[in-house]
Amino acid sequence: MTAAQRDRVLRNIKDAEEEADEIVAEAEQEAEEIRAEARRQADEIVDEAEKEARETRDSILEEAREEVEKSTEEILDEGREAVEELQKSAEENHDEALAYVVERFKEEVDAQT
View (spheres, one colour):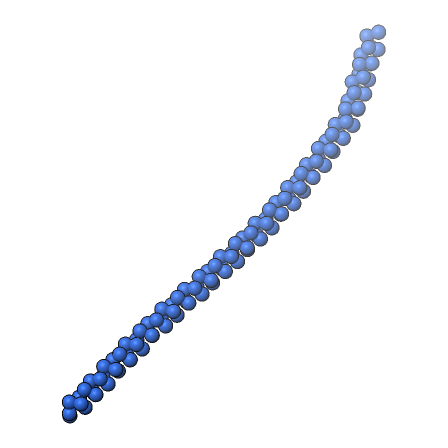
């Protein structure tokens, strides 16, 4: 092998090594870009899942609030009706009790005279 051939072979080896280094560097860069894109997509998926979870939670809470409010109103309405019935009954009993007391008083007065 002549010196020129040897120089050419060494230059070819050096060129191949440089090309291999460029390929490795490009592959590493591409791998980093792929990892960055995967992280970005994962973050988007997590963000979307968290958003959906918040919306679901808010919806469930709103439904629960509405149900509690409805139940509260029903209980209050029943309580109001019970109070009205008690008042009406008390008024009716009051008149009867007053009439009874007056009658007993008259009987006592008549008995003493």
